[in-house]
Amino acid sequence: MSQPIITFDHVVKEFRDRGAKRAFRAVDDVSLTINRGDVFGVIGYSGAGKSTLVRLINELERPTSGTVTVLGSNVTALGESQLRPIRQKIGMIFQQFNLFSTKTVAQNVAYPLQLDHWRKDYQDRRVAELLEFVGLADQTGKYPSQLSGGQKQRVGIARALATNPEILLADEATSALDPDTTSEVLALLKRVNEEFGITIVVITHQMNVVQRIANRVAVMSAGRVVESGDVYDVFAAPREAVTKRFIATAVDGVPEPERVAQLHRDWPGRIVTVLIRQKDVAAGEHGDAVAASGQNISQLIARHGVASSLLYGGIDTVGGSAIGAITYEFSGDEARLRPFLDELGRDSDLIDFGTAACPVDYDAALAAAGPRAAGADRHGERDENEKGEPR
Image 1 (cartoon, rainbow, N blue to C red):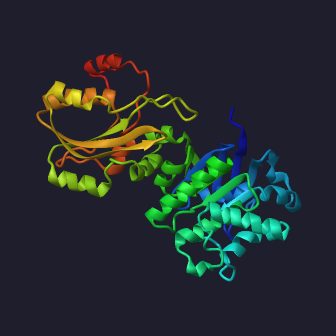
Image 2: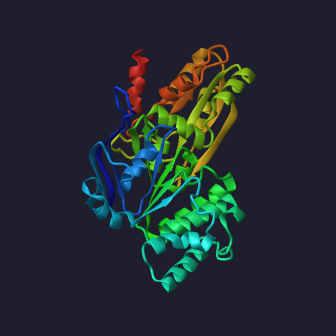
């Protein structure tokens, strides 16, 4: 059974500038549970409130209202002296590394141990263990200026692990790194979670980071959590417009706006992206169960005799299951095309970008691609459509 380690209960955080008539609400009525052992992604665009949210966990910011419970303690009710033992159980990894430029690699990792008054021989042993773990055992005497970005972040991870934390907060920890180094750091964080059982909260604006490391995710917009749940469920059946936009940047196969515009210039027919979802998505707190998608495209094309060209696509794996999208141009007379698209839409989720002569706005097309309920009576749907009633 899952055991909560961090809980937000109707948390609000407001900031008020001097002279301002109204406060700015950075976190707006957030209720969220992070379980022990999770790698939990919090994603949002700049200004969404995600960094403020993570600062509420270790009480670097105090909520305006609501409660934050960490490791069984209501931290919003604690004073500074009472917060100290809880903060010792929380490690922090920063975007810009925050290393001491005048300290060596070993001295940077030892710093929290010195603050915690560890014996010198214990410090030395712990530093050696951690630098071996992060792959920097041969860099102990170097200074940060002599290290690459990836090496600096590995030092930051080792330092965050020094006092044996139960929670690790990673605030945009890979944003300053190149793609290859990002992959290495994410793999290291995954090892931290799996080998030490440490709960990791990853704050990011990169959906592919969530895809590669997290098991659960919350999407923030304008201070609110608009969608949350299992990573596969959120990727496979995004319900909110902001989530769909994030998914389009991470999941292989969904064409970006510029590519759709180019496809319309090159192909006159109907540009339709079929979302691929290998399995059903279970019902969650934000909606009903959602059916698999894109499992019988070839059969329907053959059955209806529709002319088709495969233009773009890709399949990825999230949580062990296939997710992706394939974009086609469908062409032909409306009498043949319309029944085909209707049946395809009953069996799969579609993003319809229209034709070159009548294109559909990109954001409107994404927003209209709502997931279908699992277990829906598709034959019943067809009967209603044949009567001329709206789908």
